[in-house]
Length: 221
Image (cartoon, rainbow, N blue to C red; front, side):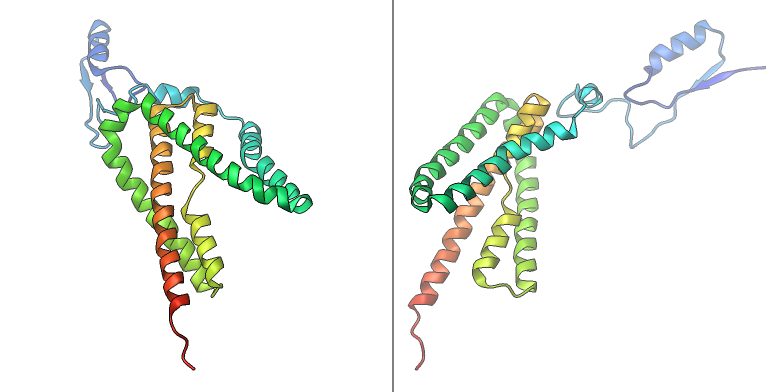
């Protein structure tokens, strides 16, 4: 009787050369290594240690929810309480808090890009296209849903921004808090923040110009 071995290669299994040597030493007659076009023996990835990283990461959902609540929920509740109790203070504070939040987001983006500059140069083309397409789909979805429900124009604008512009700052904080600032993730979140700023400013400028032109148009008697 002749015995053989069949190896289905994967990133977690033994290498074919190592198996062949071990099989010969143990008296096996044949070794078959089928070719899988969708699972190559060697594959290049953004992070060669990604497999080990994904197997090692364990996220506590309660910790993540607590982080989200701390970053979004607490400022939101504090802002509502201050605006309700001291509207004057809220109005004046908004002129200070808004620029500070903008610069804080910019600092997070700069840190993320600087720490992953080589990855940024290598993958920015792919990331930029993916983010632009996803962003366009999100903006179109928000605008389409608002128009479909025949909402007033101010609510159409608000829903478009709410759906189309994500919280990149929160994304970066989660990447640093739970994934150690993993390069590929930080790069995507950082570029998302840059692109959202560009798109939001452009869209706001277009809508402002249209509103100004509409208000300036003469009304027929």
